[in-house]
Amino acid sequence: MPQTLKFPLTLTGGTGVTLSNEGTNFDSSQPLVQDISVGNDISTTGKPQFNVVTASSYDLDGYTLFSDRWTTNFSAGGDFTITGNLTISGDASVGVKVTAEEIISELTSSGTIFKSGSTQFGDDRNDTHYFSGSVYQSGSVSLLGTNITEFSNDVTLADGSSTALATESSSLAYATNELGGSDTATTTDLYLRKNYNKTASTISNNTASFNSAFSASSPAGVTTTSEDDFIFFNNGQVMEHDALSVEQSGSTFYLKIDPSSIGYNLVSEDEITAWGKFESKGELHFDGEYDEVNTNFSGSSAQGTNIPSDKTYSFWAKSSETGRNQAPFGWGTNKKSFIFNFHAGRPLRWYNANWYIYWDDTSAQDDGQWHHWMVFDSVNELSGSKLYVDGTLIPINSIISSSGAPANYNQNLTIGSYRNDGNAVNAHFSGSIKEFSVFSGDKTSNASIYYNNGTPYDVSNETGLQAY
Image (cartoon, rainbow, N blue to C red; front, side, top):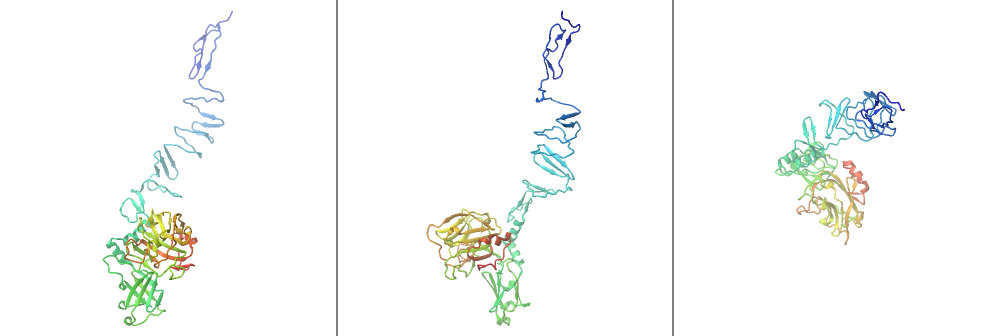
């Protein structure tokens, strides 16, 4: 006969623990099977989940983490999410990225990166921050309470913005171009300030020659530049104006004297110096309407034959026209010239009506800045012609050699226009030119040397130089 319990045994589940026969009395008269489950896989390969686990310490496969500190390095192989505060006394290394609404770092100064992407460095204006590399700022900048919205390259400074900082380039362009522009009062002030010293290079037949010296052009409303705008000295003694006359011919400034009026003749041993209205750098400024420089250089293989030959032109130019601009130089007609922005913004070297070459468009002809140009004429095989700008080769865009051949030059070299005719309409270059030189053959191997990192290179002693 089975034994029964006087006080039956009753099992009840607890938090997270479930019994299959919970609450059933067991008095041993009949077998009672109880299945106990905890709602999670708690095997060694299981992944139990708990809403909250509270303990004084945690043992994670050999890593012990106390509730108030970590006693050793901790590495998370996957994502590691922290909803509360995290304090790390040592170094923290993150292999991919950190995502946070706000990051605050504090050393000798502080920096904050907000969730909007904005940043804050320091607590007040007394903080000093050093950046060893470059800084990219896409928005505005506030300097000492003043909002700066841009760094402007506007060469005219026309906007008059109180929140834009002018660059060195735009300031220089404004001083050299705009102060000599159409505003008569400003132009007059600049002209009156022009005073430079020059020394004659040669003296012959009572004429002193100043090579590469250019007299300053007087603005509208001011008397044309004359000998009265200069003071000349002969061996330290002032020369009388009544006996003097001046003349600008190409790149040579001439002082001519009347011996009967001044009382003596000039000799080659004399030292003639001048002080007055010279252009400061020997630059040629072209108004796009009438200005040009006429030369006696035929450019042919034998002077006087006018037959084109392979040559290299090296010069510095600053274009004032961003649309189609006329020729910086030419040989009598439009179809024997080099032209900026001729068609679709492309530079063109024209040798004849059906014998010419285009290069790719380049911003150097449009930005109102000085650039070094080097053009090599391969007159009979156009594929050999080359164009370099600031020492960089410009790719050939197209070649037209459908018929004919390079035409003879019907005029000598003209600078600032494609033809020798100051009254010609739509024939003149608008801008400035300096250091214009012509070499025999191909000198493009010196393109980067002559560019000289933006500083004009002295080519006066270079081999093959034919005109300068």
